[in-house]
Image 1 (cartoon, rainbow, N blue to C red):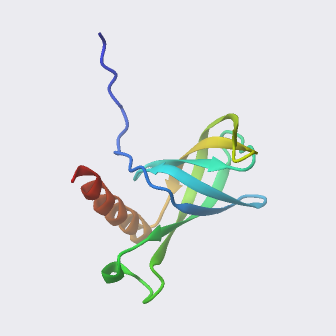
Image 2: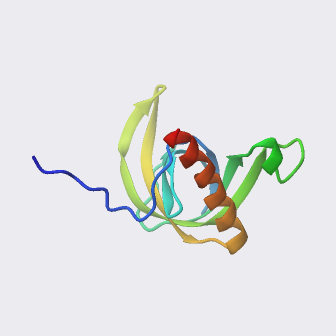
Length: 127
């Protein structure tokens, strides 16, 4: 029996996160999983391959790590490119696309926030 090895550079964390995106029109996405290199998500509309999006990931944070007191969230901003769009599947009675995006640009501060979030959630998954 042949073993399939995951060739991803970055391990993925299965976590649902709200993502605000904009291209020609704003689209609300929700992640299925997330890594330092990108994420897969559900989308209410078809997103063509190679579409560039400005994305804002709304990350839940612990009280100790909260950037804004009482908020419980911090936002990581960047740009991403659509690398896969699967045909729509009905979810809760609505056609929903499964989309994979690759982070094409992110500043160092946001990348650090994302890495910290992933490290916290990877550690939880391992325990």
